[in-house]
Image (cartoon, rainbow, N blue to C red):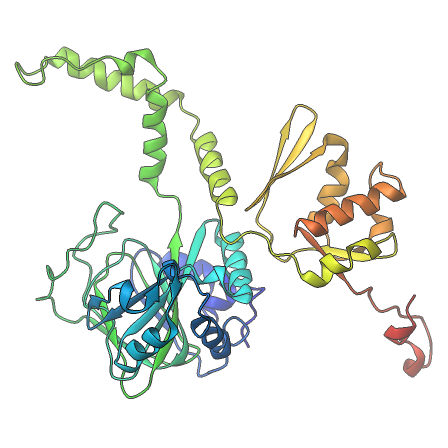
Length: 412
């Protein structure tokens, strides 16, 4: 069974993640078949999608509708900023494909799964859900400018791959529809429930259903690329007066070799003096702060917040993606959503709460008194950083194994 808390490792199971990055990532497609139709059930269920699409309050900006390779105009399936349920239902019955973009905004288990993947691989992922009726095709042959995993949640779908006409395209290499239609099929893949297909960016593909409808999650991978590092270096050039000078005579005589040599030397010196690690740190910080969705606080925790005391047990949210930064006697906890700031003397208890397993509030280490420990725990619970958990079961040494465990209802 799929474990959403294990994230990337269970997405690839039984393929080893190290083997995937060495042999397949950015190189070639990979199909993993499992013969387990319930593999993704903990992450996304049909009832979840049904509830979303039957709700007239669902925001239309997160949906797209395609039919036979052409996008259906929003006014045919939405009313202002919300979906129009009857219009959407009619289009599905007519063979249209429904796309739910950034689906982690709507389904908490899917969001939690994406968090675990992001923490494992170190970059952003975006899940889009594709719902295609039987005997239908949503998109014509095309390639994406990012790598994707296709997680088959329901039904079946047949995929065709036509090779890569452009190596590792970026956002500036948008697919030109109809340009590569003469290419021969290189791979065919049939996905069933529980299977996953990896397609590197730039690989032409299309897909269609047979007599069974299909629902799959496309998990788009959005890492930091080397050209983005170069862009950051170029931005640093704007802070240097020498790079703010005009390049003369571009429309007249060709600049001299001496001018070319001087420009090359300036660029070389800029690269040499740039701290690449600092740039990567900055890009990582942007990733952490701009992730979606933000933290989710269980309402049961919010309702019980006044009852949290020294005997309460808490633990950090699974696979929380965060950064800790220091600044003039304060520490800042950077997360998706509002940041949290604390006096520097709280660093020890903060680390203890973020990095440990479940612990009793009264046992939080550091210089805090009893009221301070409770106040810190409540603040982090309200912010969605830690949550309350039941106390662990207590065991006692006994020669009688039947009496070795104290019933949970008797634990103080």
